[in-house]
Length: 246
Image (cartoon, rainbow, N blue to C red; front, side, top):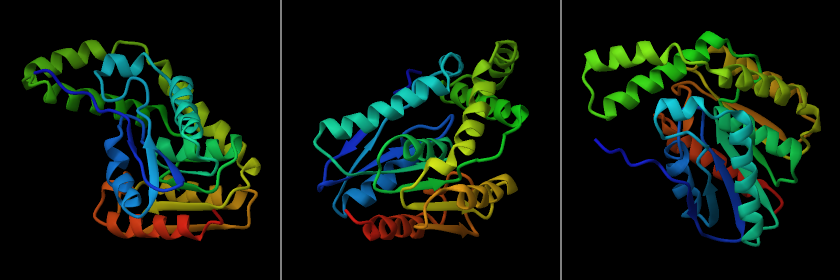
């Protein structure tokens, strides 16, 4: 089966722009519904696709956080090139980390971080994410369980420097939270791992802005934009963005 890779998207709307960022092993589908919701309410939304994502697992592990950060910066500059002088950013999981990093690095109107880790993730957890991604991708290719099992055995022997680099990116971004001065909305899922609720509090405590809020959603897991409470989450993000001084 020939799979169609996910693509970046741009929904053109009004003169207020939002950069939307997906998660590690995810793709722009993580934030597409949120993008449509905001676009229907007057926002221009752009979501880059991180290098290696939405492709085979071998391609994914050939890339790393430095590549993905370049994609994030390119997304920001794309909106600038389109004439937007005021840009907000919203991301989920790794996208939540990069949203914080954008806020630490560039002038942004506001930052929305969903399920963003601020504590060091275990390498075993990150490895499991990649292995699960590899298994699901091979299923989509139409391979049977026996073939998948054999191919995963081979895949597991490949070096994955991406994982250590990703963990360091999370730590470095967390250590630099004091340089984030833009308005901030932090969201976490009550059904997610405890690490993410603890991370939300760390982020809240260490950013250098008084315009900050934090909210948990009891019936939501990790990819908050696709969970059962997504409509409420979209509404809350929209309200936050509307509260900014555009």
